[in-house]
Image (cartoon, rainbow, N blue to C red; front, top):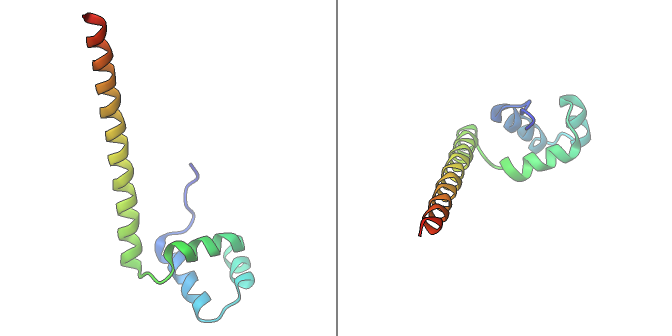
Length: 88
């Protein structure tokens, strides 16, 4: 997976510039991202503070870890069920 080039603080700073009236094309060129990236950031981080964005990132990471744990547990349970069914 590609590593993010911008931190939450930087993304929110760019979005604040956009809210202040800067044109999307100019912001995209200035920061070296595409206009689509700016619109994606706006849909994800629009109206957030830095602390809220950090909390969102933390929750997404935690959610990913929990999903991985659940998948592993389900795989283990499936393997045990298969082993027990073969034994009898």
